[in-house]
Image (tube, rainbow, N blue to C red; front, side, top):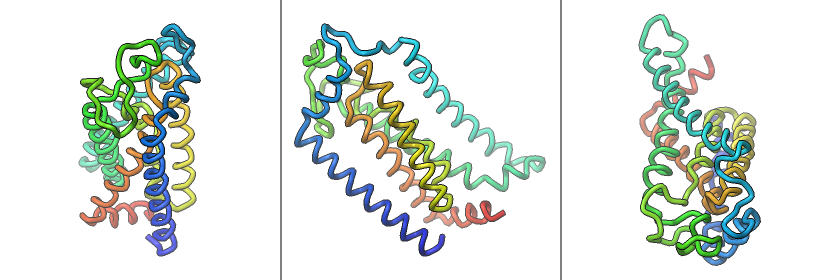
Length: 238
């Protein structure tokens, strides 16, 4: 990695940390922002702008998890095929493939689905008293007991959508920026898909993106500690 590229990436990380910290403080200090944002989609009397099974939402809602599962299976298959002599092209790209697989498992799967969603205790907008439900609203990052599993914080769909940034993660600064912007756009779209039926709060969606982003930094750190990204650099050069 060139010195200029390393400096650019370090600056990007510092800015992301600062923005994430400021947003966390803001949502804890002003939790009504989540209620206001969800209220834009609430129609009253328990009705939301869209139902989860409405056709306009059904395809991205049901399709994205299947796409994520397909990506995981495809990466595993590619790595296994790369062990065979006839698939030399895949073998040459094994470090990059392993990075994608490790990043997906660490971020959307382990951090988001298995940890945050299972232990935050935050219930979804559709279930709280302010929107016709029976449960209490709790701000982001505040421990709660209003949900036992598959809770609201953070959004698994948005974290999965954000993962497309990984495809440009090890690229040049220009390539990296394009994929980061694409991930913001796709994650923003999925945030609307999940907020419009009362499935998630705004903070659930924002911090889902950061969960994926920081998990990829952790994945990269681990690969560099093991010396594996030297091989990835050679793969791109080849």
